[in-house]
Amino acid sequence: MSPMIVGILNMALMLILLFLGMPLAFTFAFSGITGIIMILGLGPALSYISSVPFTTAASYTFCVMPLFMLMGDYASRGGLTTDAYGSARKMFGHMPGGLAVTSTVASGIFGAVCGSGSATAMIMTQVAWPEMKKYGYSQRLGLGSIAAAGPLAILIPPSVPLIIYGILAEESVGRLFMAGWIPGVLLIITLSLTTVILAKLKPEDAPQTEKYSFIEKLKSLKSIWSILILIIVVMGGIWGGICTVNEAAGIGAIGALIIAFTRKKMTLKSMMTTVKGVAETGASMFFMFVGIQIFNIFMALSGLPRGLAQWVSALPFPPMLIIWSIIILYLILGCFLDSPPVMMLTVGLLAPTVSALGFDLVWFGIVVAFTVAMGAITPPVGINLFIIKNRVPEVPTSEVIKGVLPYMVTIMVTLILIVHVPQISLFLPNTMFAK
Picture 1 (cartoon, rainbow, N blue to C red):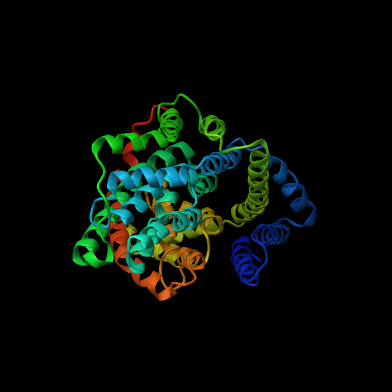
Picture 2 (picture 1 turned 135 degrees about the vertical axis):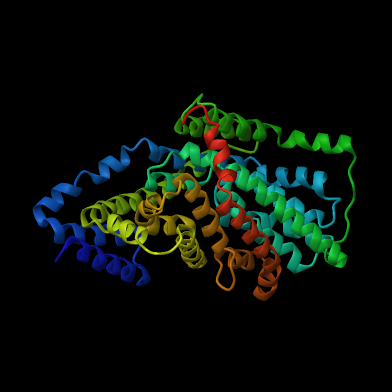
């Protein structure tokens, strides 16, 4: 059998194992090892892959993910979510649909230290929905706005999916982080405008809340100034070339820990619990990376990514049409799987194709992250919709779905802008001192 045929057969094997419920790490590893043996033979294959666990563990880039996860967990335990929501409420609560706008802004702030769309949706449902319910907000507007803000945590750095994409596509994680800022802020603005329009059309869905004075708004910033400064230091250090992404992640983790301790919201016991939780998550991610690295070795030996890139490049279709076909694929996958598994499944295969079409892989990383996050809130099977439903079991799933539909239009318009105006994503990376 030719290596290309072996590649196609083992891709099919991987998908079968995945749908049978085999853990991702073992799915990738088993399919990859089987394919390498079929191409090279047993002895050379075992010699070829024996060093993969060590090289993965020794990867300097791999340190970024657990360190930023620590930063997010320390900040969360330090009361960031509640403080971010409280501060945003005083700033924006008086607007039409102000509490929903508040949840969108707070999701953006929390996303800047969390990096997980599903975690943001879950926590913001706990924090924001009781307040909206208290003031008489409709279930559709309130929960729809919370669900729609999920993609913010994936776009606004530090983002775990962007780190994974950077490792798999061999692109600079720092450039990807910078590329996510303007699209993330743009999405905050467009989602907030949508909320204001919906509240003006149906004022009974979003009763007006009290207005705070300018002094009170300034005072509210006291509760989040430390986290805002930490984000500026970490991201400014990456942008200015003062520190590497790994060093910035370490600064962020230590800074968030100090903030949590100084607020007296962290004890040694809770610190160790947090470290243990991140270590467990990091270990599972490590095994997935070992599996995907073995699978990527097999893909390279089979020549399938290169063959796919050549075949797609020769198609008589405009390159942008192919990009939109890939976007539709990611939307469908994002409905069923969380963003890290989707990226592990696809980036190694599709990144060479996109590069061969002449597109920037940093821009493509933002498009992928945005699209997968959008898939997580796309009815009828968006993962984040059911996370929210589980937190508010008294609300019918249909109400959450109906609530998110107007925001889906807004998110799609924002995605179209990001796809067709690459400079929205590439402006900040192109101004970085450290390329």
